[in-house]
Image (tube, rainbow, N blue to C red; front, side, top):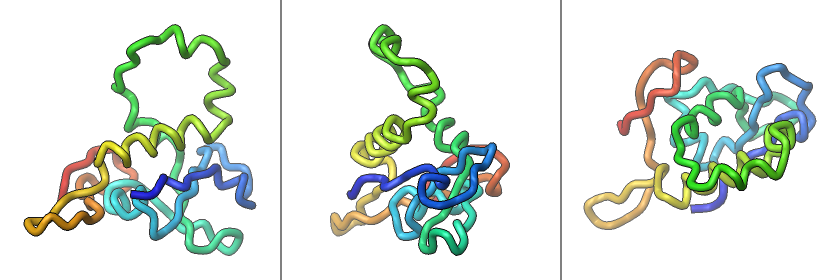
Length: 129
């Protein structure tokens, strides 16, 4: 599957938002797989064909991720990791490469896995639909 293609909405012409909106294409793997469980909204006129989501919803996916060597994280400040989309994009790309957003049918054809769960905006709780 292709990489996540995420960016901060303000980097793409959106206004600064205290929720740090993450922008993703409306035909991309991340959006298509999570559109029924996360509170995505349309970007608007500044960036058509993209959807935005408060970054904390994506960050929560990694809340319990193991960190084999925490000392490697001490070489840069938390602000560097928070302000640079590269770190979040690489993490989402890892989820894509690990198959979190794909499934195989009985004939062996891969397709995007669509999650269902709690109403959008009421928590990050994913289950396969």
